[in-house]
Length: 213
View 1 (tube, rainbow, N blue to C red):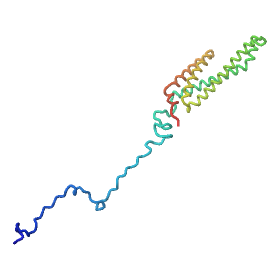
View 2 (view 1 turned 180 degrees about the vertical axis):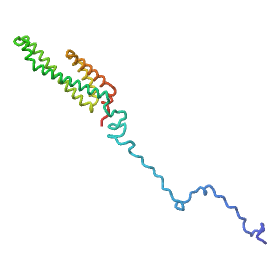
View 3 (view 1 turned 45 degrees about the vertical axis):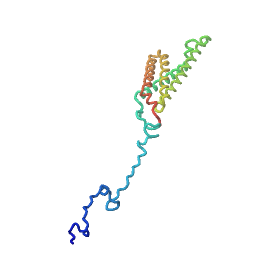
View 4 (view 1 turned 135 degrees about the vertical axis):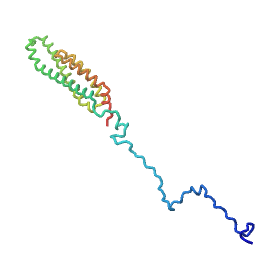
């Protein structure tokens, strides 16, 4: 009996070929900590809280913050309207001074005209003096209002623009009464019309309606 015989029941069993590694074994990652450094778990970075630069009062588009398209400096038409409002106020101040000077010379003028001593003439003279005093008060009020509007152009709201339009409209009436004074009435009327046009422009509306911090 020899071990080389295939029919020998006591011989060694036939050797089987080695099995090919399966997909589960070939694709299985090595155990962590065994020759391969373990990668740290992925951590999501926190989203920054401030997506926009800091503006006073909040981010863009919020009340009190930066608003795209809002004028930063006073537009040229608005600046010109402010200067012309000052011109109208100065004209009324000069007119008020002229009325004051005229009142100081009133009695002397009436005496030279021979009105004193005549009761009826004196009554008309007093009526005329009252009219002059009324225009004096009116010119003084217009001068003060013009000064107030002039100072509010930098920080005032849309009310300043509306008041400038109304102020220019009333100044046209003053110019009509001043037509007899060497054409000064025409100049005042032209300046008043320019104030109305410039204050009504879109640039002026954007300036006075701009958001404020």
